[in-house]
Length: 113
Image (cartoon, rainbow, N blue to C red):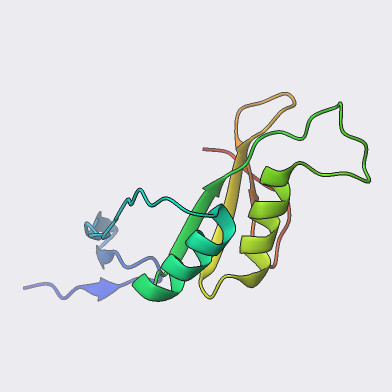
């Protein structure tokens, strides 16, 4: 009987055949009323969230560079201050499909998905 090895992607490999493992992810959606920033930050801590994914809107051309929308400020604050990995996601505005991903370490990284 052949042995299996686990590759760096968590898949079993055997003689060039890859058997994909299904990873179960627990997802919880909550609707809570309160001040947006304080509520999100307290729930991240209370629920011991691992990853927080926030949708971002495209920056408006009506705003100058010196002023940001409250949504942009909210997402940036969460990315930089939440106790978990926080990812801001928005559709790419130019050209091809894909998304711009922002984290604490990388801003506006293009992801083709």
